[in-house]
Amino acid sequence: MANQVHLPVNAEKITIVGGATSRPAAKFVDGVATGEVVTRAGRAVHRLRGATAFLDGSALEGMTIETATDFGETDIPAGSVLVGDGTAELTVRADARPGFNGGAPRGEIAGKLWVENLRPAGAIADLVSQAARRQAKEAS
Image (cartoon, rainbow, N blue to C red; front, side, top):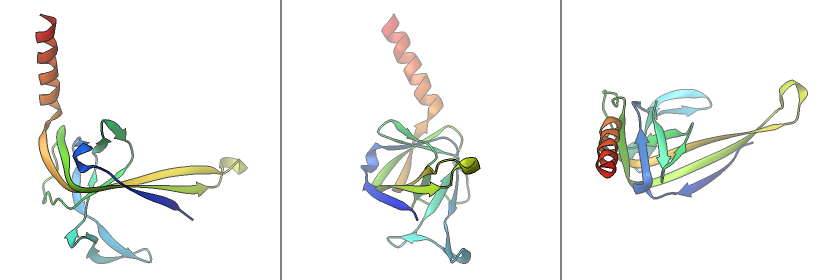
């Protein structure tokens, strides 16, 4: 049995970094795909694979990232930076698992980040370049 908590978060504090694929989330009933897509507030939900989410500068490693933003058939280029807008929610789930080789039970934490809208904000290379120029300017 899974326990989960839903936490509203400020979408403006969310940054998505890295290359990713974006595909509509398939709806399942009893473990079988229905051929429909998951919707939220009447919009199709898209899952991002390959990117890392940051909340106020802290990495949310291993989170499933979902959004209503449709990036079409093109993948999000490597090194991209996206920022959140609209509503956002962090869902954290804890599952109990049996221990290894008969050992004590263990907990497994999983999570999902919902960001209503994502918009491009630049690229990592640009940010690193700006920081390097600023540091060089301060050093002189």
